[in-house]
Image 1: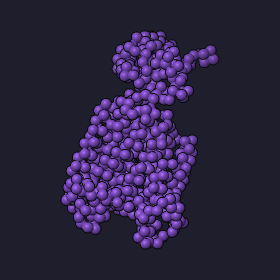
Image 2: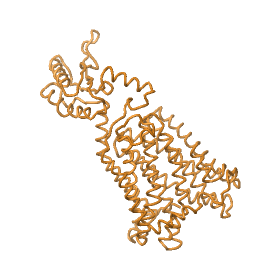
Image 3: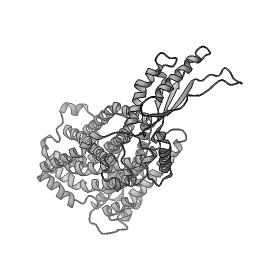
Image 4: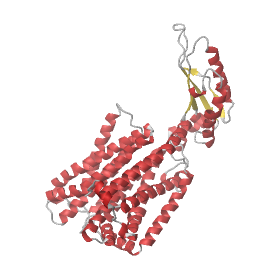
Length: 544
C-alpha cells in the first residue's frame, strides 16, 4: 500500500504506477511457487522465503521504477514508443543488470561463511533477485510497448516532470557544492556516532519467551519456566558416540557413563541430568544387539540466553567432560554438547572466524566491479569504505534498539534481545548489494555529465540533481517494503525487517545523498584518475 502511494506521488499517474507494482507481484508469485517446489527436494531454511519475499518485492519495484523513469523521460524528449523502450532497456536496463549481479554475488558469497543454513538462505534470496531482474528486463519493456502513449494515463494530479524533476535535487546539490566540507563532516560524525553501539553487540538466539504474550508459544514457555525452571526451555543434549561394545568392555562403558553423569550433575548451574539413553540394547529376540550411541539431557538452572548458560557449555566442553572421562572406555572427544545455547556459541564462533573473509571478498569484488565500470580508483575506493560505514551505522542502531531497548515499544518489541547471529551477515549481504544499486545509478549519471563537460565539480552537481529524486523514491519504496515486516511477531523477521529499513535509510540519506557527493566535491581532480597501465589490463563494463 505504501509503495503504491509513493509511486503515485512520483509518477502522478496510475498507469505508470501499475507497471512496477504489477511486475513485482508477478515476479514474487513465480519465485514463491518455484521455492515451494524446491522445498520438496532441498532445504531452503525457514527464513529464506521470508527474506526472499522481502527482497524480491523491494528490488523488483526499484528495478522497474528505474526503467519506467528512463522511458518516461525519453518520451518527454520526443522519442517514439519502441525507440524509447529500446533506449531505456539499453541504459537503465543495463544498470539494473549490473545492480542485480552485485546483489546476487553478495548473497551467493555467503557460502564463504561456511554455515549451511546461511548459505541456503542466501541462495534462496538470490533466486528471488534473479527473478526480479528477469521480470524487470522482460515484462516491463513488454508492458511499456503495449501501453505506448498511455503511459501517463490515469493522472492523479498534474506533474510536468517525472521522477527526474530536478528542483529539490538541484537545490540540495548546490548546497553540497557550497558547503561540501560541512556536509561531509556532519554526515561522517553522525555515522561514527551511530557505529559506537556496535562495541556492545552480543549474539543469541531468541526463544518463545521473547514473543507476544498473547501467543500460545509464549504462554507455554512461561508455564514451563515457572513450574520446571528456566533451563527446561533450553536444555542441553550430550550426544555420545560409543565405542564398539562387547561383553568384555561393557562394565567399563557403564562405569564411564556413571562418572560422566555424576560429573555433569555436579557442575555449576546444572539442575538435573537424565540417565544415558542408548539407541539400541539387547533383547530376547536379538541378544547381540548393542548400542552405538547414547544421549543425555542436561537441564541448566538458567535460561538459554543467560550468560551463565554460555559459561556452562564452555565448562562442560573444556573441563567437566574431559576430566570425567579421562582414562575411561569413552574418549572425551566422542561426547558432543548440543542444544540452543551450544548452537548459539558455535554459530557465533564460526561467524566471527569466517566473517572477515566474507567481508573482504565482497568488498574486493565490489571494488573491482566499480573499477571496471567507472575507471576511477577514487570512486571505487570511497564507495567500498562508505558502504562499510553505512553497514556499521545500521548495526549500531540495531544494537541500540534490540539490545538496549531504545524505542522498542515503537516496533512492538516485547523485551530486549541479543542480536541473532546470522542477522548481521544477512544484512551485510543485502545492504552491500543494494547500496551498489544506488552507487551505480548515482555515479553513472555523474560520469555521464563529466564526460560531456570535463568539469568534475559541475558533473557532481548536475548528476546529483538529476538522479536524486529517483534514488530517494526507490529507497522510500525499499524501506516501505522492509518496514512492512517489522510488525511480524517473530523476533528474527522483525530484526531483519527493521535492520534493513534503517540500513537503507542511513545509506541513502547520509551516504549517497551527502557523503558521496561531498567527497567527490572535495577532491574533484582525483575523481576520475585512473592509471594507464591498469586501464590497459582491466576489462571495461558498461553500466549504461
